[in-house]
Image 1: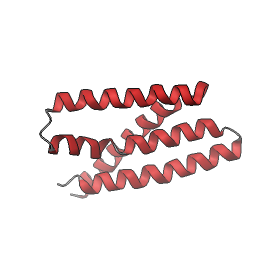
Image 2: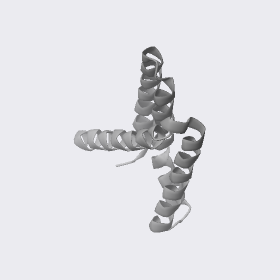
Image 3: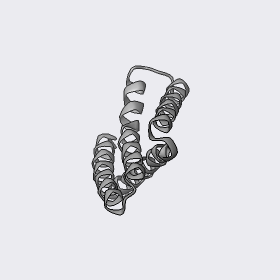
Image 4: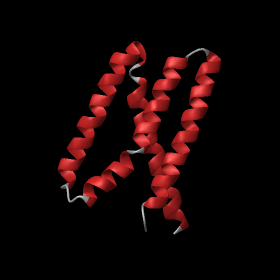
Amino acid sequence: MRSGGVLKLTVTACAALAAAIAVGSAITGHLSLGLGIAAGLLLGSMNGYLIQSLLGRGTPFVAGSLLRLVAFSLIALGAALVLGRAGWTVPLGIGLAQLVMVGAGVRQGLRA
């Protein structure tokens, strides 16, 4: 089974979900919260491609995992500085993107 379909589905679903959340939060007057979650969804959807890229370069899995953890943590800290009180929404969006990726993987696995 190739992961390309799962990754494309993850990015597409996360982009659609991010747009819906951004629009919904703008309508309800909580734009900064929605933009943080949307940004986290978009960043988190790229995690699969980052894993694939690091493993393709021969990076050991543990080192690649630590690199990704540090990178996403730095992004979350940067978002906390930029968004202030709504900074917690970016890691929430990254976590939601991982759930979307699991759902895409399960969907593809059930089809196989």
